[in-house]
Length: 127
Image 1 (cartoon, one colour):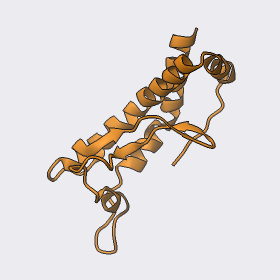
Image 2 (cartoon, one colour):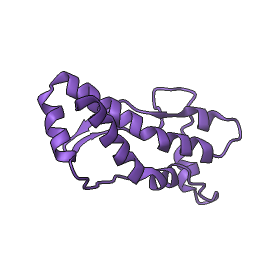
Image 3 (spheres, rainbow, N blue to C red):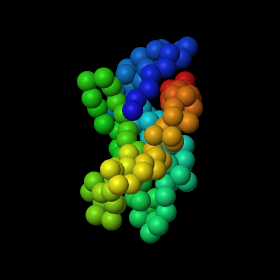
Image 4 (cartoon, rainbow, N blue to C red):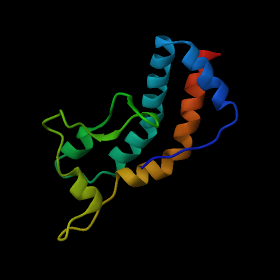
């Protein structure tokens, strides 16, 4: 799941960020993590709770780079041994268990807000 939006003034903010070097990278990473918080909150509120391990295992990753740009992930942390591996089965279901989506709806509900948060967070620290 990914989203892209065109927001006025975003290109100029990004060029300012890039000219700031390491400080700009730090601001960008923090903005991405802050913007993912509404998705995390909704996913935790929507996740089925039997033992609570799924809900408690949901995290926001550190910012990562790809050929298309930077991103963060909301989901279970593979390094966390208590985070359930079965989150995918719950989200998408199996042949014997119906899907109980909690991540996709959280993403869909918040994707427009996420971009606005990124823009606001960067603007606060750059301007």
